[in-house]
Image 1 (cartoon, rainbow, N blue to C red):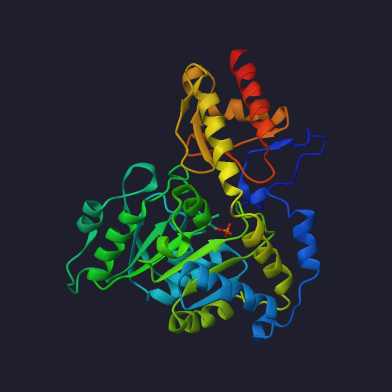
Image 2 (cartoon, rainbow, N blue to C red):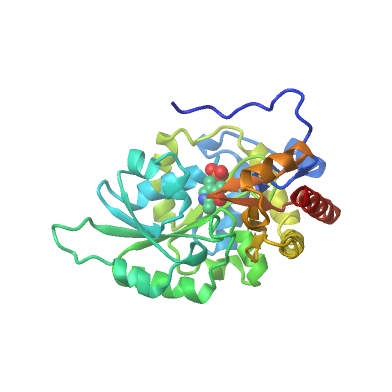
Length: 354
Ligand SMILES: *Cc1c(COP(=O)(O)O)cnc(C)c1O
């Protein structure tokens, strides 16, 4: 049985400090104003000027010829995998990749591809691991056609792949005639943390996308970029999946607003994440991974408290964190302000002590 998401329990204390996910950011009043003022048309028909403005801006920012506006990051991955690959192809990705764990099996159900999972610390793998995955081109082996990389690596702790490593890996993939695709759900976090422009970060990739509903704080939308030819072919999949929209400029306006106002401030989220990690590390027995960006993974087991118990105790105080793979995750974003970090740390210390 698969369940729809649960509704909030009536009478539960309101969440005061939301460290659950950067997907839970709310559009700011200024972003809503930009949405209200958006010029709109029929996106599916090619008539929405605000969507065109967003796509032009994103193609330039990520250094590709063309772009496509889609409702979600998941749909960017589904459209990209379907456009790059044919049934029976093999995609090489990290074993913790979002396409493998969190997209309802769409790679198998819709694209009909299999994923060759690579291992490596922090959601990343190296050139040796990639070379080791290359199969001989025989009639026995599945055709390998795509390398997929997440920047930042979500389950890897929001880790940032160094651009030199990305270039080396995409070079190997291209050498074998594969295409390369970046899941850039949190690409701008990586760019801000590493001080590398987005077009350089994506230079080795044929396609990439950015999510506007993570730290950038828009209510919905993601943009997939690639060559003119690729985006042209991708439109069939956008249509097929029901991702062609109508007056989508209302949402594209929020994305444009986010590009203008919410990129530079990601550095604040990273500073808050480092402060949170440093504070957690001072608690005896707490295992804490050093964050590169805005995701702090920690495991309280060594303090004598199970992750789920700490999560529940925090929630009872209006502080929400998520549980992922046996660890807890605290995520900083634009609705989390520096004083809340101190407050959250204070609560964790108090709960763990009792
Ligand atoms: C959130 C996320 C996605 C999916 O994006 P949605 O907009 O939620 O569909 C894909 N990949 C990674 C790494 C993500 O964090």
